[in-house]
Amino acid sequence: MPTLDQEIARRRTFAIISHPDAGKTTLTEKFLLYAGAVETAGSVRARKDARYATSDWMAMERERGISVTSTVLEFDYEGIRFNLLDTPGHQDFSEDTYRTLIAADSAVMVLDAAKGIEPQTRKLYEVCRARRIPIVTFVNKMDHDALDPMELLDHVERTLEIDAAPLTWPIGDGPSFQGVYDLRGQRVLRFERTAGGRHRAPVIEGTLDDTDGALAAAIGANAVAHLRESVALVEEAGVAFDRDAFLAGSLTPVFFGSAISNFGVETLLEAIAEFAPPPGPREALRGPIPPNAEPFSGFVFKIQANMDPQHRDCMAFVRVCSGHFERDMQVYHPRSGKQIRMRGSQKLFGRERETVDEAYPGDIIGIIDPGLLGIGDTLTTDPTIVYEAIPRFEPEKFARLRNRDVLRTKQFARGLEQLEQEGAVQVLWESDGARSAPILAAVGDLQFDVVLRRLLDEYSAETVLDHLPHQAIRVVTGSGEGVRWPSEGLRLVDRDGRTVILFRSTRDADYFRDTYPAAGLKRISEA
Image (cartoon, rainbow, N blue to C red):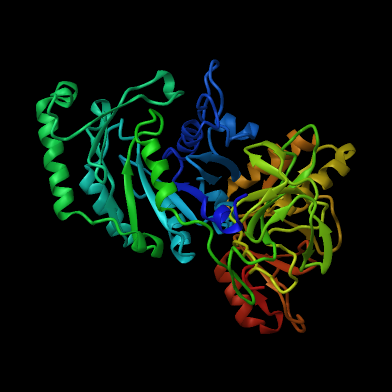
């Protein structure tokens, strides 16, 4: 039976980050294909004869072709247990992505070969840098018109201030893209296209010497000569891969390919298995907790209700940080001070799940939330272990939500309560206690769309949204004595009973703070 250290050593828990439409969800699906977790790969927008992507399980995701919620996918490949965390790419869901990155040990950054580093990619990279998360780069869509590979490497290095070490090199681009050259293994890997990219791409191996002339016959003598020149230049002047620098976050290995055509996907997966770190120590309030520490510990980084329409339960996603998890074990919940039993433990695969009897550091398990858990909560057998809280993002969008049908008031209230517990939005109420038309606070407008759609689909509550002109929110932490509350502001109450004020602008908020210090105004992230 494997030891705890052996189980830890074979775990790779990583997230995938990108700007929207760079191919993140497609790459996720192709990892599953090459690991044998699915027989045929799905797509972001499926045709009638094809299946949808496993990670996009919400109806809204499948209709719009975007990811709006983080998803966990567990699979094995060549003896390695992968826990893949697929994140939303759109900036409106950056808070959900941030929480997910906290649960990851490494990340794959997907770039569009024609665009390089895009705004959302850079923002997510900065989160990874701040948390010292090593990054593997995959330059996707090489089968479309692409920037020069040297130019892409330079763009990555200049924009992110990080060394970029290519480990594969593209053979052609656009319609002439044939495969990649493995710089470490000194192998030419030419791929054959399959129908819709739904099956593994057959690969033809060769060498740059091309003694049998097969490479020249396939791509032409001029293309072979250009490839040789490029490889010679990269080997002479390019950045050499150094794993210590990669783990320290100062270097990213770069791979080229096409996820939709399956070109270069398996090479990337093999590299993640080889280079990406296994679970390491996690910072707790008392100090770092090593993964092989005997006490079990973990933290909740996501809550999701109604994943299974037949059960309508609420699932808490727990990242295991130390020790050995066993089904139905009893743990301590520091925030409430209570002992709870971790019932209904599940292994997650998109919306699919199955009972799990044990788990190890790096694993992500789902447990049935009895209504007690919150995002960032610690669960542990050692009461002295408490992990740091997960910060909340500052909302910048506000809207009043109205229930169209008074006969669905209970469903409306239950749905809102659940969505706030998940962290989908923040729900604010009038200070006079009225509960009929709450105000929603979000990072971006798409969060509002998700709330309206889920209230309708999951709770049969039809709602309408009235956008507000306010742009800033502050928490009142002082006595408020002698304070004249702003006439154009809204004084509300959040779920914790705190008084908050909505302002028309950050300038108004700062002016009010300076004029009335007794109010003790603080940002959401500071309060």
